[in-house]
Length: 207
Image (cartoon, rainbow, N blue to C red):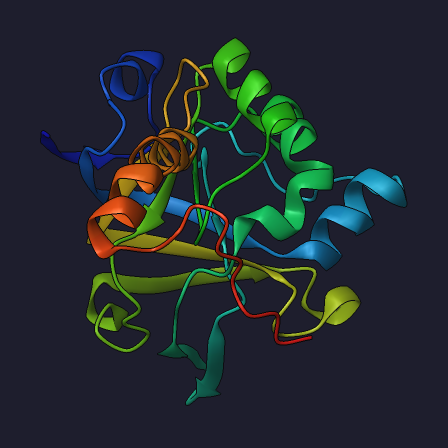
């Protein structure tokens, strides 16, 4: 697997070279969003109040930010689970001209198809480290703070080699976790046999 250090705005060439399982570090400008921003724009038909042309990396994140001496200070940062936003995934890639989405877990088939069409990738953090990345992030601005609140607002960040992230959806729409699931399924019978577990065994249901 390869390692890449990319700077936004990303190009088709930047993302097309990324393969499933590659490691990525990110620099440059990006913006954040969660469910409320996407609902505000896509469902409630409001206009996004900024241009994403030179800021084509979206991080699914609700940062903890405080204001001190007239400046914003980032207290805690960790991408949230992207699959929660699958409802708006394809639209966000298409209408915001995204080249990369950053978030935990992955996204669904509809978003992956749009990523293939528009040349976009999804990357997931290799670790849960909410306070280790703060020094790699500069808070630049915030939009829709009054309308959506501090956590759900669109924050503008400038990144400095933020990572590591793993490529889990590539620009051809392939999904790392789908392949991992297949590998697990292919090896399941052999693992059960090696452990001496009958193939009719059923796992205990907790609820």
